[in-house]
Length: 262
Image (cartoon, rainbow, N blue to C red):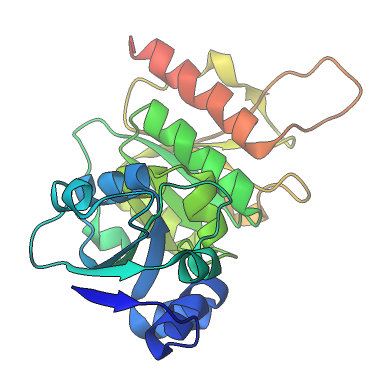
């Protein structure tokens, strides 16, 4: 088995770039996954692994071989190399190099009566991770990211989604592309916005539905508000007029799930 014990090793340096640079991830079509649970979820999500790097004092070769097939290269590393690559303070001593997916709208496979989350231009990795966790909890058909501001394989997003990046169907596109996609598929879409809105709980989400949320700072763009089946609002009784986007999305999603009988 191959062993790497130097942080100056060219392969290790290339992996550091994968952690730090979206450009490197895009050029190579690969990214890093950290932790046994996340790697397991990536495999369930049909992600292809190229290499597993592991710290033998924390995880054994036998444990890894139960997880992946023999075509995946295994590399034993030492603690110095592991700490150079690991993004989290506490993980199980294992990282994987995986191939990215295209995330095209045309690749989506939807049910006959889909429930979809659309997020326009989310910026904060923590919010994106929380949205993906909520989508997984509700077993949504898909999560669509309009006008993405972040590379979805950013290690902050991989970490904050606790593997839900791999358990959801995800596609990206421009606002106009996603609106056209929803209209073509005859999916009604309800936009969370302050302007010209009606209370969310009065709407029928039992047919093909997309719930659309924007950023906390600027909300949804006019294109969404103009094209919406209905603009909706979560009634608020305090002093502020907005809440965290992932919290708002969860309220809307689970109202739709309630209407659908969970």
